[in-house]
Amino acid sequence: MTNTENQLLIIFGASGDLTARKLVPALFNLYKNGHLPENFVVLGASRSNLSDEDFRRRVVLESKYLEEEIKNGTSKAIQTFSGKIFYTDLGKEYDTDYSDLAERISELNSRFQTDNNYIFYLSTPPSLYEAIAKNICEQGLASEKNGWKRLIVEKPFGYSLESARQLNDGLHEYFKESQIYRIDHYLGKETVQNLLVTRFANSIFEPLWNRNYIHHVEITNAESGGVEKRGGYYDKSGALRDMFQNHLLQIVSLVVMEPPIGADAEEIRNEKVKALKSLRIMRDDKTLRENTIRAQYVSSMIGGKKVKGYREEEGVDPESTTETYAAIKFFVDNWRWADVPFYVRTAKRMPTKVTEVVVHFKTPHHHIFKDSGMNGKDNKLVIRIQPDEGILIKFGVKVPGQGFKVERANLDFYYSSLAETRVMEAYERLLLDAMQGDATLYARADEVEAAWEFVDPILEYWKTSDSKVYGYSAGVWGPENADELIEGLGMWRNPGANLADNPGFCVIC
Ligand SMILES: NC(=O)C1=CN([C@@H]2O[C@H](COP(=O)(O)OP(=O)(O)OC[C@H]3O[C@@H](n4cnc5c(N)ncnc54)[C@H](OP(=O)(O)O)[C@@H]3O)[C@@H](O)[C@H]2O)C=CC1
Ligand SMILES: O=C1O[C@H](COP(=O)(O)O)[C@@H](O)[C@H](O)[C@H]1O
Image 1 (cartoon, rainbow, N blue to C red):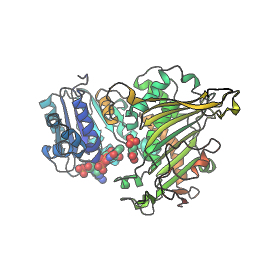
Image 2: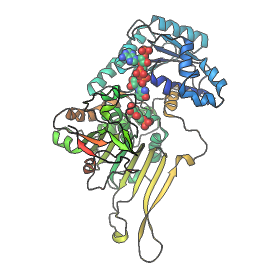
Image 3: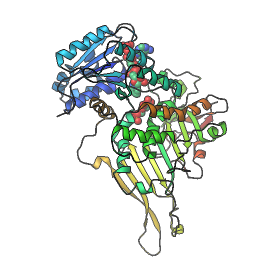
Image 4: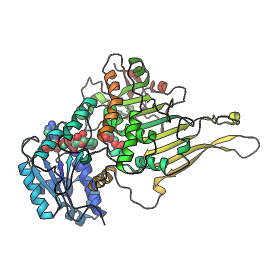
């Protein structure tokens, strides 16, 4: 059962990786679980010369990303679903006259009664987004006189503050802000959304959620994989643009924000923007040198097997200085967070894949059990975003017996222990929200710009010779000097041992 209105989804760049790997499997799951409206059609559009049948084979019937589904006996569902998929060839360029496309849309709209409700999904290189929006608009396809029209925009949303502003301005020429859905797949993750619930649906955390009780906040996003087949894209991007500017600052905004007055899209996003605007922007070289670290993984041996260094990856410049590791320390200039340091790091080729937020609480104001074995800084709240999604609270308990010996104990909640509710994959959740016109989990223009405002000076500083690029062996927790960033507070919380046989650390340039 669904309350989603009939609609037609048009994907630009449909011959690409994202469509086959994420979008179509997400749509299939929505279909299988009864979330698609009765009348729903997908029209793939790109330059490749494919027929409807070719496209169906590629993204559904012979797709390796639906292999399991096909094997598991859902083939009837697959066949029916594939009947909803169509393709149109745009010709040689995306910046062209879309009258043929408009005709195909109109024909499918009449045939399947999709009520003139259209979602346009931009899944091409971002340099084409504005031209595609313009050409859609020129055919009158952005007009909401008859049926609603929405535009989903894939990341990256700009490469800098200036380019993000240009892109926002460009898209606003053709679509209203309320029609634009900027995707950030981390917002589609249940555990990221759960940050809002943990904070604002409970009364036990929020009274402590401030500078009076919190000592520092640590956020880690580690991936065990390297750049895989995306070396060409990644080399022009780097960890700061690829993960920090968007996904991690979104998480930061949810940790930092004030309670919204309600749970609707504008109320939540207004608070997130305020949170992002309160991040203290680092402007001078000394501050940037002392509070930012970038590094690149170098070749190592793990279990006797050679793992490639970043510069040896396909599509990467052999002399590249692009960072695959970024660690940033910063402060939030507002009443709640004054003087509380935030430590955020993201990297590829770490020992394990993990994303977590760790809130470190302060020592009790008057610590009467000082000699008891607890150092007083052991109260932690760990929000595990992935894997083992859940929440861990670390606290002290008395060791039975005479005296007051204190031992560390855990209260540990695992999402997997909840009822059999199926957890939607991020793209499923986000697509369904856009289909229903809910933009809460999409980034607004001012949010994206506020995030770039914080990141831009770091990127500018990293272009200078004052900024070093360090090297870390693939399979270790980043460069050794990243520990200096968090010095005085112990180490980063590294959930897992280093993997490299001979962990090494160097200065690349
Ligand atoms: N793949 C992923 O995991 C992720 C992707 N994204 C973003 O989603 C979007 C699509 O990603 P993905 O599918 O991987 O990208 P692809 O490189 O696979 O490109 C998608 C399609 O765009 C067209 N295209 C590619 N390069 C050009 C070019 N230089 N000029 C014109 N058209 C081109 C091609 O179609 P044709 O030649 O047939 O027109 C291609 O099939 C990108 O913006 C990417 O940053 C975001 C997060 C993750
Ligand atoms: O957006 C991106 O995210 C992935 C990591 O996503 P996750 O859901 O697996 O944590 C990252 O590998 C990729 O480089 C980046 O573009």
